[in-house]
Length: 290
Image (cartoon, rainbow, N blue to C red):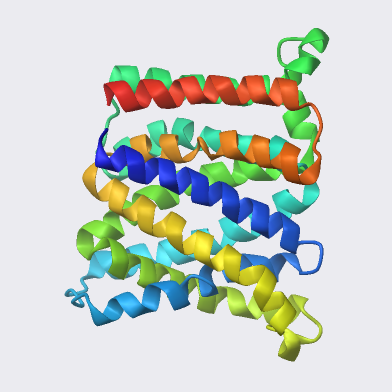
């Protein structure tokens, strides 16, 4: 099995666990605090790598990618956490599978990467699985499952995240090309953490008590999973085209549907499992023919 595929699959698993820990923490923490910890929480795990890597020369392209990526990551992260708060994990997270579809438009423009035809078929299967999440509404009309997504706030916001991430995934590729996977991660997460802190100060009344011991116990697993997601993803996209890695990463919905049922008692597990199976088929197509 190809190394990039293993890394991408680990990215999916850790992404799902990050969602689980984030949704659990939402019971006692604010949206912006958890969004902030997606970045600040990764730094204790990433910064030690500076002892072992060289700081590469930083050109204009790097700084532009860092600025643009930082702004978009802040917007996407806050929107993501708000989506998790608004709806079921197993209903909301599958909408991220639309990212590979958006990447078919953004990657050729931003990085000049064109997925192979059979890989596109796998991406389409993943998107079809997202449609099946609301297949129970099909009796109301062919477009009813999509209308259901629009009505539900969580999936609607997550579609916005998918669109933003189709851009930031390519920006990450540019940043890695200019530097290295680990250095880019440290740079972008530091910028996002700094940019998001004012939001935390503004939305948290007792800002001086943001990081209590109880909060750290809830949020450190979020930071650890976020760091593992980033490390696995960046090393994967170093070796293969961005859409392939992101498509495999979106198989995190398979884990999220399962965790949503087992840990949060979410309903409609049968149809959501059917949707996840379709997405899994798309993952297999990508793994075999990329």
